[in-house]
Amino acid sequence: MNSEFDAFAILDMLPVGVVVHAPDTRVLHANKKALAVLRLTAEQVLGKEAIDFQWQLIDTYRQPLALEQFPVNRVLATGEPIEELLMGVSDSSSAEVTWLTVNALAEKDVQGMIERVVVTFSQNTYERADIPFKEIVDSAQDVILITEAYPLEEPGPRIIYANRAFTHLTGYEAQEVIGKSPRILQCPDVDPAVRARISSGLESGQPVREIIYNYSKSGKGYWLDMHIVPLKNNHGEVAYFAAIERDVTEQKNLEYELRHHAFHDALTRLPNRRLLLDRLKHSLLMAKRSVSHIAVLFIDLNKFKQLNDTHGHDAGDLLLVEVARRLCGTVRECDVVARLGGDEFVVLLDGLGTDPVQAQVNAQTVVAKLQAALEEPYLLGDITHHGSASIGMTLIKGGGDHDPDRVLKDADAAMYTVKKNR
Image 1 (cartoon, rainbow, N blue to C red):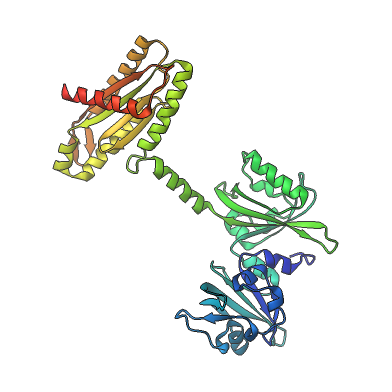
Image 2 (image 1 turned 45 degrees about the horizontal axis):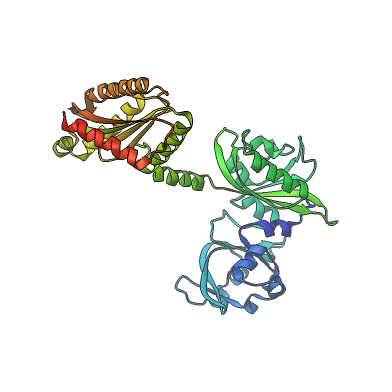
């Protein structure tokens, strides 16, 4: 790492707490995260010995640790590092316990004498905590990327440092990106508003935090929670930008899945009633503007209960999935196929035209195609099932006001009429 970097400034940006002790346990440095976790100020910590702190360490049984069991004292006594030690922190101001995973190790001189002890702690897992400071940054699980502050335009800002987490996430070795712009990682169709906020923050020398989508060396996409912080030189001028980036792809995918499950049927992956009503509401609004007809087809499978009773729900599930596939393969891509539950499906046909006769013909043509598709034999594992469906239709003329729930009920009633007359 460039010697001009303020190592303590970089430590202050890390999401892991770092406390550096002298051989007599006096605190030489505590970064911002450490002070926040310990609920102390720098004045309360710097220059104090471990025993002076206004908090106590406790073990997993919530019993106070003896002074000799403090991580710094254990390292000073044995010279051996401590890895992944679980302990709690509490103080007199609150009954709350903050649980930490603690690492500690000694930095020794050429004669093997301990010069200082570094203790790191976090609720997250880090590979290791090490000294000198460059190696602390290298070993952080979050990506740390440092660029020159200027020029901001191509070919800048040029990358001058990337830690190991960067390589692990992106597939790029540090030497492959040194001297290049972080733009090599960016999605070409990144949200212009996000791009503008990042540019504005860099130009004004202010911190920036955004969720962005990048690409790895292999072309695989990933989401980042990116925090860019300006680093100033001794003259107070912004000389570098440090980007601390956390991979939140799993979180974003989970959010997508939760949204998808909220609006889609888990078995068939089709839109559910909630999403169907939303799409129907939109279609009715568009039909009102264009005076075009739309149709809602309510579909109920015949012999579905008989299949379940005879061959079990697994066979029924296979049938429902196959029905969904056939429905989607028969209608247009712009049409909506939804499952309401059980063996009930709905197809929403948009844009049937302004002529009522032709719209009726167009909708009836689709109904006939769906009937034919659903009457083809089904191979469900080792079972061959012959099924059919009752399809009720309601045709809605554009230009008027229609309630989505009422429209759906009318289509349902039409389906029961069809089923009754079979």
